[in-house]
Image (cartoon, one colour):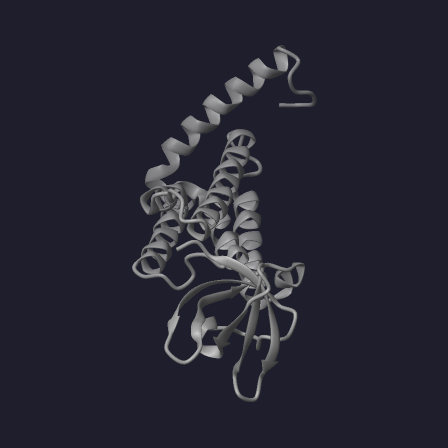
Length: 220
């Protein structure tokens, strides 16, 4: 069932219930348990998305309620902590590879994959709200494994999407660990040294070619 939108009104925080006024002006009963796990209490005026189910006493009641995104959500710990993790990851990546020629190509590629993953999480969230065709979970996992997990890490709390669902959550963190392990092996492994040198040589050749074409300036 497609989620409806409405505004929380007459919220009694002490008793843990109130009413959602939908777009047609109807009052729909909502209990605190319909919000699931939340960090802050609901309050009058909150914009929410919800579904309804029959209720013997109330006629209908709201279920699966979530508050709509607000700019203030960017300041919540569940978003700031992933943001810090992403900043540390990319900072460490730059520290280890900025002097390598292949960094010129690797950095844009990783950022592109992360942005694509972020966008697909947002599209999947919208599809879930509107009962439309979803983005396959395997696609999201494969993109995360390919280096897009920083985008997923930011998208999950921002869109409030796939933060509790199992086994997606467990698989996602497993994918993150595998990706970081592979990156660590690429950076520190003696066995990966020939691959690093080969990539550096190929990248340098391309950089020289691009400079000859006038596409880049400065020393190579």
